[in-house]
Amino acid sequence: MLTRRQFIATAAALGVLPPAAVRAALASNPFTLGVASGSPRDTSVVLWTRLAPEPLNGGGMPPGDVPVRYQVWADAEARRPVREGEALALARWGHSVHLKLEGLEPGREYFYRFAVGGFETPLARTRTTSRDDRAIKLAIASCQHYETNHYAAFRDMASWTPDCVVHVGDYIYEGAPSPLGARTREMFGRTVDFSVVRQHVGPETVTLWDYRNRYALYRTDPHLQAAHAAAPWVVAMDDHEIDNNWAADVPQDPEKQTPLEFRVRRLAALQAYYEHFPLEHPPLALGTDSSLQMYGRWRFGPALLHLLDTRQFRSDQVCGDGFPGAPACAAMEDPARSLLGPAQEAWLAESLTRSDAAYNVIASQVWFSPLRYNAPPAAPELNMDSWDGYGPARRRLLDVLGRGVAEPVFISGDWHCAAAMTVHEDPLDATTRTLAHEFAGTSIATPCPWAHRVTEARSHNPHVRYVNGDRRGYARFVVEPRQFTAQFRVVEAPQDPASRVATDLEIRTRDF
Ligand code: FE
Ligand code: CA
Figure 1 (tube, rainbow, N blue to C red):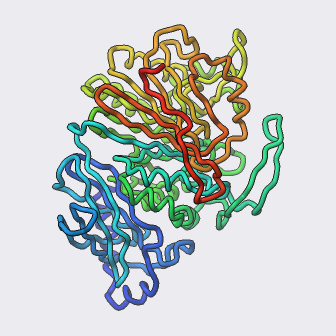
Figure 2 (tube, rainbow, N blue to C red):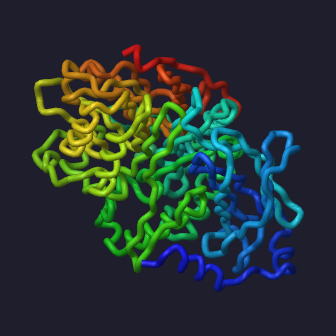
Figure 3 (cartoon, protein in one colour):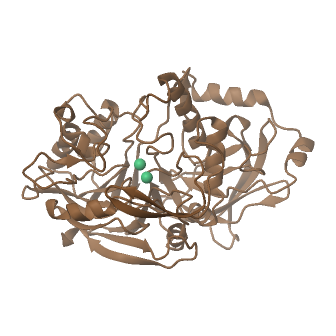
């Protein structure tokens, strides 16, 4: 396995591009993808940009690394300089810059920009963390299919200036372009209206080239750029960053791709993912074995956030592909099956047990709470891709929470459906003790053709306090020492990038 140092040595071997070659490459603005910051800590944050004068054509940079200037200020007027220097845009990583700024002060804003060859980025905001922050603002985003709607939700999120944005996946979708315009489809027993308002470019993503171009396409959206420029993000992928409903080494459609083809595809997808986010660590690869560190822990004032990776280490889904729910079967009760993998599961249990935070926030790609689609007492029909398909693993985490973890709050995405739920000792029996709350954010842009099935299922799921799969948007949270407030934001006209965005519901954990 290559170490980080060997990776850097490999990159360095390509050498820095000579100034004349840099000038030739930078005939047009290379900052087409904006900037980003992420992985905020008390004294550090990672700043990101990527040079891509031709964003949809592999980036358009020649081989060789390029020095990029950065400047950091303590104020939004760029009057009080804090730091400046040069960072390398590495050809090895698609000419992305990952600059870890260290030695910062806890709990304060910083403003930064990059410049190269006469071009510069707009001034962007980031913020360090502090356990002493009195109140913190977190937003959760997921599922932003580029073709089906615009990103007014991100415009609204940027204007709220969160302390951190948590993205739990489906940042891109892997599919080939769909025809523009409105059409209908028969899905789940009803006619669903769709509209394709803008198109993917290029085929279904398989190669590094494809994935780079797909991230670049999404990142050219001005509202998505604005949300990255407004706050640091912490990110973990779900399934569509590689392929629908993949699990560890297993694609959803093994008849269409061999295990080796899927492993090579996964390697490309992990590399492109790293190239487009301010992550602390690059992916590791040995042959076609690859992994990327995405799960992690961040302390924001009264909240300790655990961001989970429920995709990379999971056991394969069981009980068939029934959608939105499949009948429970014996295989899902196998205690050897895991959603987090043994190392992450042990890390989470230990960290939660030792936490002294007032609120223990657990960000999961998929819903932790159950949702049964049929009436009891029949065996429940459940979404086998979510924690519902991994009962023993869910019970192990509930056992940890039941041993005295303060105010656990799950936040999740994936299902394109907003929900506020209580999590019970026996998750499918709402008369048992409440151990946690869950707030699921709806999708930023992707439709939810099964929304009516969720609405119809509501009476079978008394732990569900609120549910709305009909609207696009996101959820945001204000965490104070004695209060956890959630706001479900909904986009009024998701096909209009200028749409108004409003609060559908504001609710506190103590309200239910
Ligand atoms: Fe999705
Ligand atoms: Ca998903």
